[in-house]
Image (cartoon, rainbow, N blue to C red; front, side):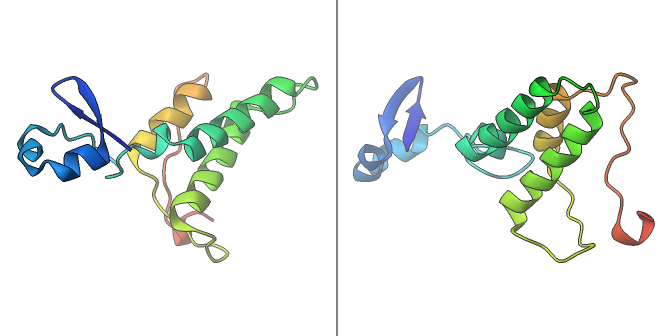
Length: 122
């Protein structure tokens, strides 16, 4: 992992060997998900968005909608972050992930349902 100090990129091992540099570290933790780097900037997150986007673009029938793609991404990110859950179990995804998914698969009307608790979903 690399660390950025005053615009200079340093390997993490170098920073660990020089504790005096800790005062100059730039906080890169995501405010929404608390990860460093943000889930949307990881290889796994990129792969989820890229694979769903390629399926969407490959659909010649026109039956696959942005809403379907968003829901598939929500499911895949849920699995990535929270693991395989029980049937009917719901988890609220961080805002950064929602924004990323919605930027790739926007709703034409601009109106999104948002998170619903399991008992209110029916």
